[in-house]
Length: 139
Image (cartoon, rainbow, N blue to C red; front, side, top):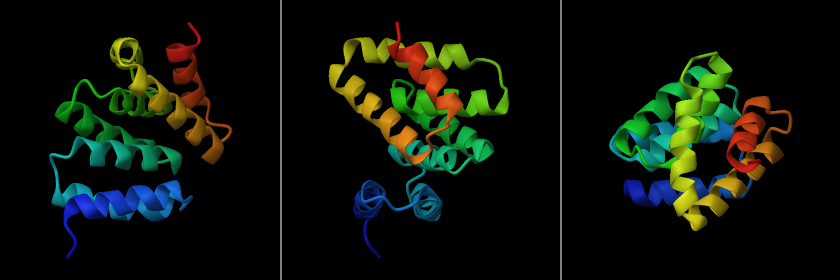
């Protein structure tokens, strides 16, 4: 059995190569089961669930990611999007926490912008993503 790091890297490459989010969810679920303290894996799982229109699972995965790494802006963004899609309160708090980190980390800012673009390519009519993107970048 390949080490978790290797599985994670291979799964990311499959995603970048255009593999559908649906087919990668079980792969990242397995990675999360094997490495439950990997906030990156939980963040990826929540993103894939959001792309697959599974906001409940995305919300739970994003909560775990944020708990493991509170300063990760992508985890906060995923949580905010899931909260919007589920009609939960507290979205602004998540967006503000992500914005705080993005103000001081230019390389993360570029990565997050690229993630928004990727999300809109894979799911063009994604209203919640567009709202969070506007809150973060249209100021």
